[in-house]
Length: 419
Image (cartoon, rainbow, N blue to C red; front, side, top):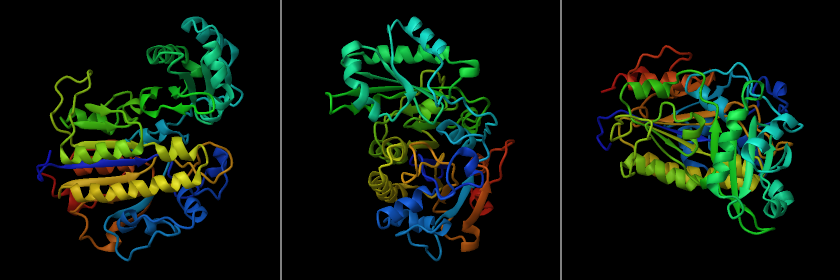
């Protein structure tokens, strides 16, 4: 993996990191003032993101504290989503080449009683608590103690298409929670085919409950077609999913995967994978997986799950600073034929009203040592009409023929060096 002649790519998804309202923002119930990055920067008196600034983040949009460099080290622009949604799956799938025309069902009034009755009957849980849209932390304050007293799982949703089940690890074993989620996934089909069933285990005592991010599991609808990940795997490339990538794609197109409990853990794994020091174990569904990986696909969820949905602006800003600091280490560890793509799957403006995702453009910065000498005009790639330009660009980077939507933004100068 340390061979400098090997073509590799690293995708870092800063989950819920938008860069301004999309043209159809009102159709998704959001205000035209949403801007995850700029609004956060303004609220905290400026963001210090020197590595992202050097790559060109400040050239995409005005962000307090982020320098607009005269000649960015990387490619910089923004992506406009064309899929019908502003959720995690829709965004990730489109990045890898699949457009979702039909939105997943939402449940602003909670789930229908027949769905709940079937869940209770098939799991044998005897009852449930909540059944409404709720904040994942507030619901523990409200119902955590009653859950421990009754043993009934807390079932809730949000502005996303999710069926979430929260249980205390001392009240309900993790194995039981996961089994209940598998049952819910089987029940929620056809008109109730929600995007994800999510296991939300927590620990602690009343007043001090804490969600266990490392034990969270997402039971997702599989991608409706082949993605770039499938094409890479079929071509013999090792594809390593870090964080919830494994759940989002239901393992499709991945050869290796590791769950993470925090951004720091995900960033450490990414850096170790670049250095070739990760103990990689192939997924059980994969036959003969390569020993090394040539695509590292990382989701950093804290900006979304921990801070964005909770509208914690200070925490959101601190998470961005942490990511930027790690990017310095990641860039330093890259080989000449490595490509780093940093983008997002949707917005989640922590200054916005409510607790839902926000329909925004997402930033795109791309770096490779082979790109740094390009002229400034070749580095500013403008607004890309579709997240799927990422898939097209990666296919070009690996020298693969891409039959899907999108156009590569990686210059021919770089792709021509493909070994």
